[in-house]
Image (cartoon, rainbow, N blue to C red):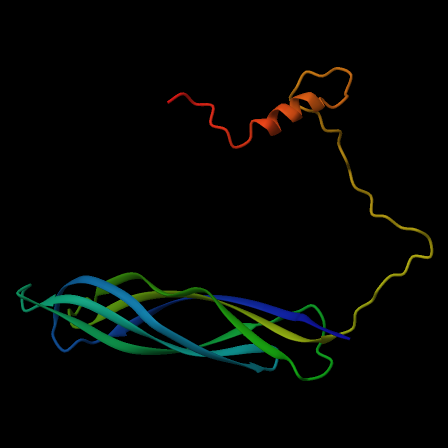
Length: 183
């Protein structure tokens, strides 16, 4: 028995977040997503990831005469479907969720009614389940060596008798550490 990755899953999500700032926006000057946190648990043959991130929108309002930054925390819940290589044996699996792409703003628009922000956010998560599994080891009764394709090497020197040129090697060793450039 050994511990190994027995299941994996990956999920890329693109969603639109609707935010309502206190002032009707005239234009969006910038948008960024920060402070991403998440937790994961196994639910059946899926991993349920519960997380949150902050969306910050820098915008102008009052006919472009003032600017403000509006910030809101956005929660999410993703279910990542697992693909099993081996079924769990012990029931004591470890769950690891890595972030391949932190939540990121790909597009920020003002709604048609002019009162809200429509923020498109993408993220990608990778889940692994580590558990105990059985390992099969093959024993060969005779000497066994994996076959490798080995090609002949040739030197850059034009040496037709294929004997190493030790004299050239000695000269190179004597010149080590010497600067041959003129001052």
